[in-house]
Length: 311
Ligand SMILES: NC(=O)c1ccc[n+]([C@@H]2O[C@H](COP(=O)([O-])OP(=O)(O)OC[C@H]3O[C@@H](n4cnc5c(N)ncnc54)[C@H](OP(=O)(O)O)[C@@H]3O)[C@@H](O)[C@H]2O)c1
Image (cartoon, rainbow, N blue to C red; front, side, top):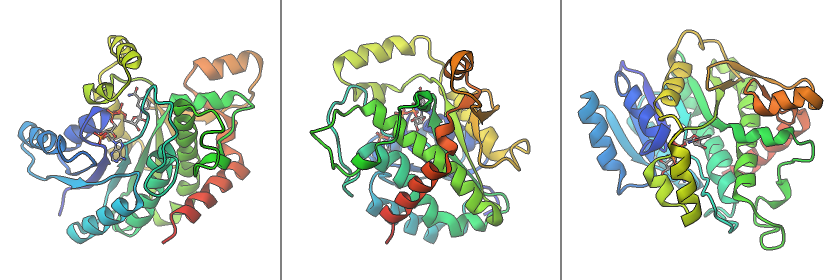
């Protein structure tokens, strides 16, 4: 197989679908999708548009460790190596007030956005090592800027339903926590995988039009809110171009362990989180909270990810 092989999770809608279309212009694309009712039509559409028959659809529920293991075994028996791994799929259901657990008894945002991608990467490492230019990209979010608040912390004590029902639950907070954890894993993975030549980066996504499938899953007020926001939000195309550029270009050939913003600039850790600088931190897109690089925090999420995903 001469063409590069790319896996994109959640490639059936939004940015993931736009990225699958973009990569299908010249790559072998594996759409790793959960919804096998709507995904085959999306796959057909991409094949027809790009005339690339090497667009594969494989079932994956990234919130389930069993599903990840089945997916990775099937992928490895079918493909000789992996060049690009894009962790795009995510859980955030606007307006949901109920704390949800995954099949592995892990809070659903963390299962989908943090530990699932961690396990998947781990299981695909040997295949990534066979690529001459392996790259991993994590879809992150500007929501992590809420960690500029010095009181904000990841709820490590409530990731397995421990305080379900007794502590107020916010789907936004858990989403932000899980993406902050993913960013910390980006930094640590980049270090760990450096000797293997594997690049690991995260993209700070600001705002993109939501797909109608995503909006349809929302509660009524949030549906209206999302449609209104969509009037001004940009199409997923530019963000998909960012995925493509970061994972294929010479410009990013030796960039690893970085958070990259929507303008493709490297985001730096904040120097001060006070006064005017803090305002610049919050309203700008050029710095991320120092919480993300605190060695103790990084170590804690790394240890937990390793323990939870052990065989
Ligand atoms: N849109 C924005 O403004 C924005 C802003 C910041 C960050 N982001 C990030 O960008 C990425 C893409 O967002 P988007 O706006 O394109 O979202 P989207 O249109 O809602 O797409 C999310 C995709 O993830 C899939 N997915 C969810 N849970 C899954 C699971 N357990 N297993 C497999 N697939 C699963 C969904 O598939 P199903 O059809 O099965 O649900 C869907 O294909 C996400 O990581 C998101 O956090 C987006």
